[in-house]
Image 1: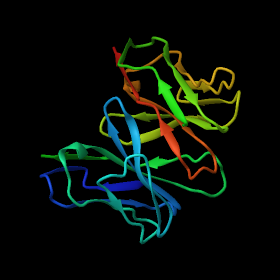
Image 2: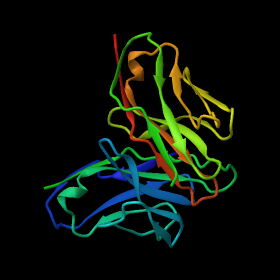
Image 3: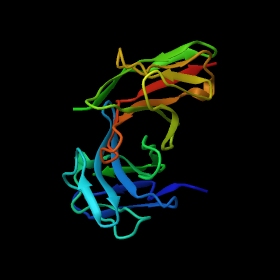
Image 4: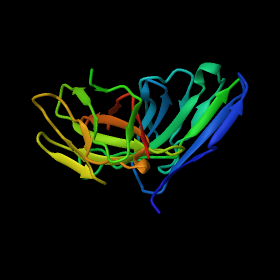
Length: 115
Length: 113
């Protein structure tokens, strides 16, 4: 089954304790992205990657890091989480070949609470 | 910059009522337009799309028409069901622009029996 998976689905942590949220896709997509979803703000892009070893900042990258060492994986790293990073996080992927309309496939989400 | 504005919710309807969720966009290029749906506890799923002016996207009884003259992509359904209760996001993407996708704030729909 074609899918994007994220782990963990729920996480409660404390300020300053480094954490990683994993994202993996099995569709051989070149493009992967991280978003955060906050009430009234919709989805805002944190980082994206056009291919292996190619990453770039989105609209709200402060406090986050990413890496793309393999095509299927795109982990999101919070080196020193703060309460304002409490949010619902989504990973997404899409193909860059063929169609031009860029449909993105989303993971189930990770709800993060930073105390 | 490119952006999407959609009507604020929440929207509460009775079963079999007519649904409209308004969406307008601002874009410098020629965007593709999407509606995504998010059911409780799940990620976003593509509901329908339109890639050029006057295209109509449709799926599961939902429709939206790409109107370039009014820069709109309103979502409609003639008869909603309780199972349609979800959050709906309008989005745009500029082809060949780093796959950039812009989302509206989302509209929560609740359908009551």
